[in-house]
Length: 253
Image 1: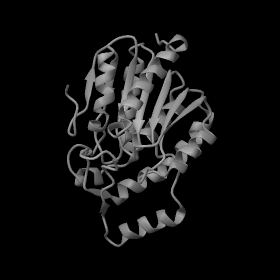
Image 2 (image 1 turned 135 degrees about the horizontal axis):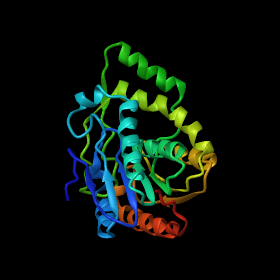
Image 3 (image 1 turned 90 degrees about the vertical axis):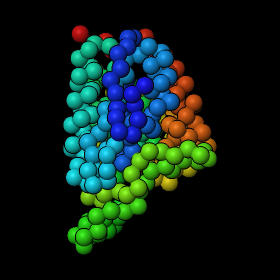
């Protein structure tokens, strides 16, 4: 299967379409177990590689949230046009993009998010980040591989471009408003121990999401739960949730 750090993939299938969106400084490799299972079901799967990812931190430093959303939006539009019931799934920043898709495309059949970044950091944090950039500090240590399972490493960057990250945090405020008016069903996977996105972000989502939302707690995994101890839980519950919703899923002409 052609999906890894430096590449996404577009895979044909039937019955269901699902777009899978990776996180900030990560790659499609964080979704390999889920994508493999979706393909085994015979589903249509689209896995975009977001701009600035799968190459170097320097490339990521030149991109912003608008660049990532442009690719996600294009993927959703293209797959929706194929006419199958369509779902979007995202991890972390991919969850942010997924939730923006839920607020932008009411014809989606559902969205699935894993530890999404949906709560804007404190103003003091944002001010500190901007001050660091003004003083010539371009990077912070990487945020990848927050994984509890021994021996599992997420292919991701070892440095975090500060300005690019700030663009994500700025965008979160708009997305958090957008989700209040959506009616697209959602399922949320939340790690109780997350060292990248605090569980309070998922609390915020549950309290403010406009559509129906089901929450699944994960006791054993950290942030990158899709390849952590709860990878199989996410995979199987995602499949069963989609199959449960297929009876009422929207089919597009």
